Every structure is written in structure tokens, then in C-alpha cells.
Image 1: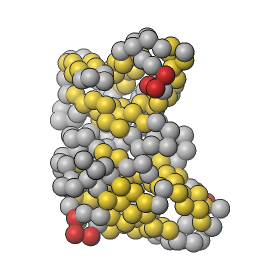
Image 2: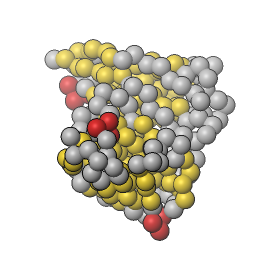
Image 3: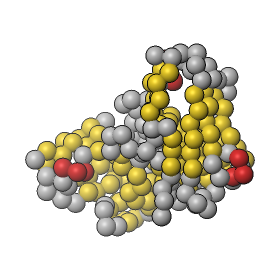
Length: 115
Length: 109
């Protein structure tokens, strides 16, 4: 079974530029998550989708971050404009169920460096 | 929100049993306890999940006392490849999975 796919694996940009990350969850998984993991910290939830609807985006900096999940499958996370503090690994995860008691499957992440 | 507290780091030697304890004093009745493992440059990987008493799989055991205010992840006979960060999560009533700082386990030869 294919896992969660993310791209790009690495991205280096200058501050005030924009960047987009793509995630393809495991087929059939209803819930998709984007996490931000800063070096030395645990992952922080940015946004959670259930099918193509947003369940929780309370920690998403909406002035610069946006995310969408078209047709309830793939998802894109965009940052515009980027700040130095956005340097982190952006992890996408998916789960089959909708009640958070099931296993989350994570991708390998997209590492962003903002100069 | 059910917050978790776990040691920042632990050291062990190959072949030993490692027990990592997590405190979650405000756990709600419907909350499950889940542990994840994360290697450098990889996303977290599910290890085990439980609600009460004891759960065992091919990788680890999870011990949960009756009051459910803590849980202990037990890794039998660790090897160098078990060096990783281990996260304890409690599914809070808002359905939001929150990762803490985790426990960095270092296994030495």
C-alpha cells in the first residue's frame, strides 16, 4: 500500500517569497492533517480536513498560510509571504476514520528553509 | 485540553527494557492514549494505542493504570535502531491530536 506522498522534500526560499507544498494521502483516508515541526519541537497541528471540509484551523496563521483539499483527496499548503520563523518541516498525515482514535500515517515531510 | 508531560530525554543500553512514562492528569472519559515514534528526517510513526489496562503488540506494550492519569510505554530489549523521539498523545474532546515535546531516547551499545 502506498504511503502518504509529499513534495517537494526540500525547499529554500528568501523571506517574503511564496511556497507551496503538496500532499497525496493514502487512498480512502477521510481525514488529512498538516503539521508544522520546528527543529527540536513536536509537530504542531496547523489544519485538519475531513473529506474536503475544514475541521480545525485554529492554529493556522491565516494572514500568510492557506490550505485547501480539493475533491477530498490531495491537499496543498501555501505560505505567502514567508517569514524566517516559518523555517520548519511541514508534515502531512492522513487517517481512515474521522474520530481521531485511529492511526495517523505521516509522510516524510517537506523541509522549508527561509533565508 | 488534555496535556501530556513526559521526560525530555532518556538513555539506555542495547538489550535493556525501556519504560517511558507519560502523565495526562486531565484525560477525559472518551480519550484514548497513543504513542508515536519519530526518527530524524522522517514523519512520526504509530506505535501503540490503548484505553485502559494493558495493550501489547509486536513492537511494544502500553500500561495504563485504573485512574488513567498516566501511561507507560515499554520497549523490550531495545536496540540501537530504537534511538528516536517518542511522543505520547491524548485525543482530547475537541478531536485535536496534540504532540508534546516528546522523549528523546538514546540507545547506546
